[in-house]
Image 1 (cartoon, rainbow, N blue to C red):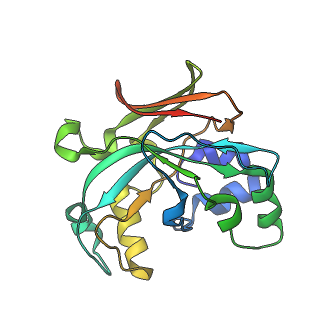
Image 2 (cartoon, rainbow, N blue to C red):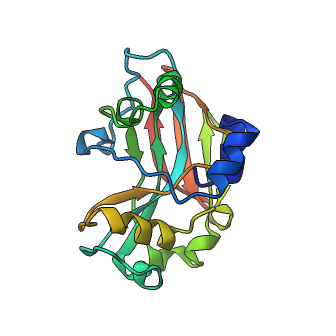
Length: 203
């Protein structure tokens, strides 16, 4: 819930106002959620619909706890574009019941990662990154980190209040609008700028 237009496409006006004025919404993914390089996303059979959410992902470089926002940039040094797969109808059901999201967000293979690049390779400020995702060659999501409600450094500082961040931890930073369903036979290509970092088949 880190881009206003994405909040708008999923929530009522009452919910939108509430979410726009809160701290980041956090949830965890397990190491079994990660799709290993070169492997496809296998559509599970426990739910009817699975959606893609394209996100900038940062990799933590140093152990940190209670990190000050002004120093948060020192705690990560690589980033990529990733896909947070969501069992959408199950998420709605869990939200209505006030239950945790792990079953709809953290199932095996729910986190696809592109190739990581260093901050130095970006050539721009991290809050000025353009990224996009194509599904079967058609542009489906376009994002710009300048539109984030919570900056990358703020997310790191906020998360570190509750959790010790460890070297190698990955933080997905939210998706822009344009989410949609994936089906067997689809292909996802995701980019930072014009650089393709993720190439994923859906099976």
